[in-house]
Every structure is written in C-alpha cells, then in structure tokens.
Length: 287
Image 1: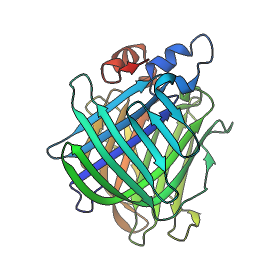
Image 2: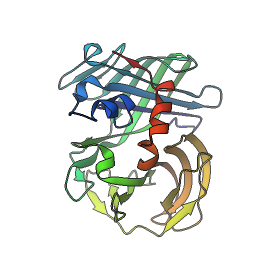
Image 3: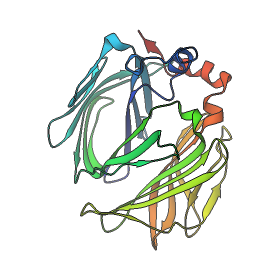
Image 4: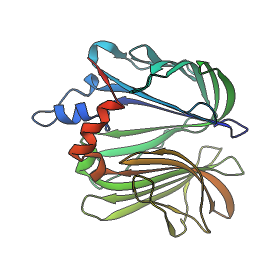
C-alpha cells in the first residue's frame, strides 16, 4: 500500500495454483504436475485504475530456480536484498494491461514457518513481515512507494482435503510490528486460531486474540469475520467473488486502532462445479 493510502497492489505467484480449475480437473484421475499450472496474479487498486489479472501458464512457459521464477512474459527475481518483479500481464475477459516493475525490499527476513493443519500438510510463514515497496508501472501510469508484506503458503495436498473456510488478516502496529490472525475452520468443522506478533527485531510472539466479530456477508454472500476488541468498519471492499473476498478493515487490536488487510476464503464455494466452470473467464490458460 502506498504511504498516502491512495494505491494498493497485491501479487501472488502460484506453482500448482490452489484456485486453478485446470489443476483441479487434471488432478481428478492422477496427481498432476504442479509445475504445469503456474500463474502470476496481479491486482491493482486505486481510484481510477482497478485491474486484476491471472493468466495460468503451462510448463513450457515457465522456469524457476533458487533466485528466479519466470511465468510467461513476467518474472520474479531475488537479488540478495530485494525481490524484483517485472510484470507484463493482461486481464480477462476484458483486456486491460498491467506492465512495469515492482521492487520489494524486506526490512528483515524471517525463517518462521508453522503448519496450519493437524497433519502438517499445509504450512504458512511470512518471509518479510515488514517491507518497503517501489512501484513503477507504464500501464496504467503509476509511480509510488509504500509499505509491503511478503509471505508463503505451501501444501502437499489439495486445499479442500483439510479446510472448510478461513479468515486471515494482517495489521501494521505503531511500533513497526506486524500482527497476523489466521482463523481456520477445518473440513470436520473443528477450528484453530493463530495470533502472532512479528516484532521489528525478528522475534515472534503469540498474543491473546480478542473475540471474533462477525461481519456482514459480501455481495456474493461470502461469510467473514475478524478478531477485534471493538467495532469493525469496512473501510474498502477490494475483491468480492463467489468464493473469496479481500477488504481493508478498521478494527482494534492490542489496544490500538488499526487498518487491517483482510481476506476470507470459502472452500465449498471454491470447489463447486459451477464456480470452477466460471473461473476460466477470469483465469485463462496458455499451454
């Protein structure tokens, strides 16, 4: 997010995309090669330019090693101090271009990783709980800098094998710490909560999360909630889809009024045959 709050950007690099209908269909009979289902999801948020793209590409269009990941005409490269992202993507079904360069410089790298499920088949960890971002886009024309965050999700089985739904949020605290809440409901309807504070000095501390506040359902009727010590305001709805929502919320955490980047995912909606049949309109594939 830009320092003045006027611009926002989300980038997700997928190897074996959990949202891919093509990967799900390929996995129905035998285990499919995740390297054949890669994508770079880029979502740009601003008053005049809201753009979203996620073109999936097969193995012949992708390469990766320890420092570089090429996905079609776009790529991510780690130079030892920063993640440099070159984007050349087109949205669908209405074509809008996002082209340019993004640089993410971690303020501190983190090796923290934790399983999300009892069988340890899904893991999450923030690579950089706090970072700086520089954005220089030719299309649409934007140049700005601000705060950033970088994390990683990994799984060795389909997401629907373990989870029913979850809410995730990230909040920047006044002292430079980052608070993360991961509120998960599993396939058997049991639940668990991660509430972690990532300090600027690199330490990680659990904290006692406040009670869950249930929020109004989205336009697509996706349920959602967040832990907060007081009332919650929906500052801005960034994404509203049949199975997923992303928003900026204003809530209270650890005695501070914070703006939280919040996401909710409904797995039953995601795996619905109707939803998966709809997704290729927004997520085309290049073999």
